[in-house]
Length: 140
Image 1 (cartoon, rainbow, N blue to C red):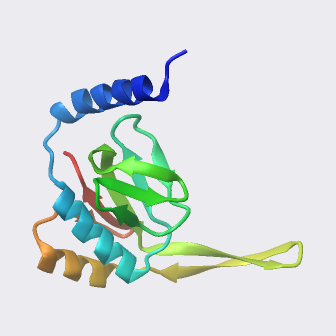
Image 2: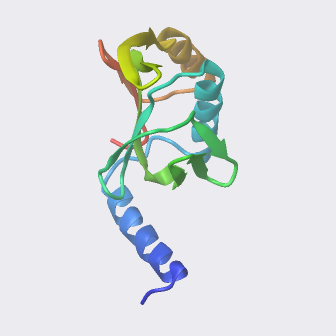
Protein backbone atom coordinates (compact mmCIF):
# COMPACT_ATOMS: atom_id res chain seq x y z
CA UNK A 1 0.00 0.00 0.00
CA UNK A 2 1.30 3.43 -0.95
CA UNK A 3 2.03 5.90 1.76
CA UNK A 4 0.66 9.42 1.72
CA UNK A 5 3.86 11.00 0.34
CA UNK A 6 3.91 8.59 -2.63
CA UNK A 7 0.26 9.35 -3.42
CA UNK A 8 0.95 13.07 -3.24
CA UNK A 9 3.93 12.73 -5.60
CA UNK A 10 1.79 10.80 -8.12
CA UNK A 11 -0.91 13.48 -7.86
CA UNK A 12 1.68 16.23 -8.43
CA UNK A 13 3.12 14.50 -11.51
CA UNK A 14 -0.33 13.99 -13.07
CA UNK A 15 -1.26 17.57 -12.33
CA UNK A 16 1.98 18.89 -13.82
CA UNK A 17 1.42 16.86 -17.03
CA UNK A 18 -2.07 18.29 -17.48
CA UNK A 19 -0.95 21.82 -16.62
CA UNK A 20 1.91 21.65 -19.15
CA UNK A 21 -0.61 21.12 -21.98
CA UNK A 22 -2.52 24.31 -21.17
CA UNK A 23 -1.69 28.00 -20.90
CA UNK A 24 -1.42 28.99 -17.25
CA UNK A 25 -3.17 32.29 -16.58
CA UNK A 26 -2.81 32.60 -12.80
CA UNK A 27 0.09 32.58 -10.37
CA UNK A 28 -0.14 32.33 -6.58
CA UNK A 29 -0.22 36.12 -6.16
CA UNK A 30 -3.22 36.43 -8.51
CA UNK A 31 -5.01 33.56 -6.77
CA UNK A 32 -4.49 35.30 -3.43
CA UNK A 33 -5.94 38.53 -4.86
CA UNK A 34 -8.93 36.64 -6.21
CA UNK A 35 -9.43 34.93 -2.84
CA UNK A 36 -9.46 38.29 -1.08
CA UNK A 37 -11.97 39.69 -3.57
CA UNK A 38 -14.33 36.72 -3.35
CA UNK A 39 -14.04 36.56 0.43
CA UNK A 40 -14.85 40.28 0.77
CA UNK A 41 -17.79 39.97 -1.66
CA UNK A 42 -19.37 37.17 0.40
CA UNK A 43 -20.47 35.41 -2.79
CA UNK A 44 -22.22 32.09 -2.31
CA UNK A 45 -22.72 29.03 -4.51
CA UNK A 46 -19.17 29.14 -5.87
CA UNK A 47 -18.01 26.12 -7.88
CA UNK A 48 -14.55 25.14 -9.02
CA UNK A 49 -13.31 22.70 -11.62
CA UNK A 50 -10.20 20.69 -10.81
CA UNK A 51 -7.58 20.31 -13.48
CA UNK A 52 -6.32 16.99 -12.09
CA UNK A 53 -9.63 15.12 -12.25
CA UNK A 54 -11.94 17.31 -14.34
CA UNK A 55 -14.31 17.17 -11.38
CA UNK A 56 -16.57 20.14 -10.65
CA UNK A 57 -16.96 20.88 -6.94
CA UNK A 58 -19.60 23.02 -5.26
CA UNK A 59 -17.88 24.75 -2.38
CA UNK A 60 -19.43 24.23 1.01
CA UNK A 61 -18.06 27.46 2.42
CA UNK A 62 -16.57 30.69 1.13
CA UNK A 63 -13.45 31.01 -0.95
CA UNK A 64 -10.57 31.13 1.54
CA UNK A 65 -6.90 30.84 0.67
CA UNK A 66 -3.79 29.82 2.51
CA UNK A 67 -0.60 31.71 1.76
CA UNK A 68 1.39 28.64 0.76
CA UNK A 69 -0.40 28.03 -2.55
CA UNK A 70 -3.53 26.29 -1.30
CA UNK A 71 -7.20 27.08 -1.46
CA UNK A 72 -8.96 25.94 1.71
CA UNK A 73 -12.54 25.27 2.74
CA UNK A 74 -14.71 22.53 4.21
CA UNK A 75 -14.22 20.51 0.99
CA UNK A 76 -10.50 20.25 1.85
CA UNK A 77 -7.28 21.89 0.72
CA UNK A 78 -6.76 22.29 -3.03
CA UNK A 79 -3.58 23.49 -4.72
CA UNK A 80 -3.99 26.73 -6.66
CA UNK A 81 -2.45 25.05 -9.68
CA UNK A 82 -5.25 22.45 -9.59
CA UNK A 83 -7.96 25.08 -10.14
CA UNK A 84 -8.98 25.01 -13.80
CA UNK A 85 -11.63 27.68 -13.20
CA UNK A 86 -13.79 29.31 -10.54
CA UNK A 87 -17.47 29.95 -11.23
CA UNK A 88 -19.56 32.49 -9.31
CA UNK A 89 -23.25 32.10 -10.19
CA UNK A 90 -25.44 35.12 -10.79
CA UNK A 91 -27.89 33.73 -8.22
CA UNK A 92 -27.48 31.22 -5.43
CA UNK A 93 -30.18 29.15 -3.78
CA UNK A 94 -31.04 29.71 -0.15
CA UNK A 95 -33.06 26.76 1.07
CA UNK A 96 -35.81 27.33 3.61
CA UNK A 97 -37.26 24.87 6.07
CA UNK A 98 -40.23 24.88 8.41
CA UNK A 99 -39.28 22.17 10.88
CA UNK A 100 -39.18 19.12 8.59
CA UNK A 101 -41.02 20.67 5.63
CA UNK A 102 -38.97 22.17 2.81
CA UNK A 103 -40.34 25.51 1.69
CA UNK A 104 -39.79 27.25 -1.64
CA UNK A 105 -36.18 28.38 -1.94
CA UNK A 106 -35.08 31.98 -2.19
CA UNK A 107 -32.73 32.88 -5.03
CA UNK A 108 -30.37 35.65 -4.04
CA UNK A 109 -28.09 37.51 -6.41
CA UNK A 110 -24.32 37.55 -5.99
CA UNK A 111 -22.58 40.94 -6.46
CA UNK A 112 -20.96 40.00 -9.79
CA UNK A 113 -20.46 43.58 -10.94
CA UNK A 114 -18.57 44.40 -7.73
CA UNK A 115 -16.43 41.27 -8.13
CA UNK A 116 -15.70 42.10 -11.76
CA UNK A 117 -14.85 45.70 -10.89
CA UNK A 118 -12.49 44.59 -8.10
CA UNK A 119 -10.75 42.00 -10.29
CA UNK A 120 -10.28 44.57 -13.06
CA UNK A 121 -8.63 46.94 -10.57
CA UNK A 122 -6.49 44.14 -9.09
CA UNK A 123 -4.93 42.98 -12.35
CA UNK A 124 -5.58 41.12 -15.57
CA UNK A 125 -7.81 38.07 -15.10
CA UNK A 126 -9.13 35.85 -17.90
CA UNK A 127 -12.88 35.57 -17.42
CA UNK A 128 -16.24 35.10 -19.11
CA UNK A 129 -19.51 36.54 -17.86
CA UNK A 130 -22.98 35.62 -19.12
CA UNK A 131 -26.54 35.27 -17.83
CA UNK A 132 -25.48 32.35 -15.60
CA UNK A 133 -22.57 34.00 -13.83
CA UNK A 134 -18.86 34.79 -13.84
CA UNK A 135 -16.17 32.22 -14.69
CA UNK A 136 -12.55 33.08 -13.92
CA UNK A 137 -9.96 30.86 -15.58
CA UNK A 138 -6.76 29.49 -14.12
CA UNK A 139 -5.94 27.70 -17.40
CA UNK A 140 -7.07 27.83 -21.03
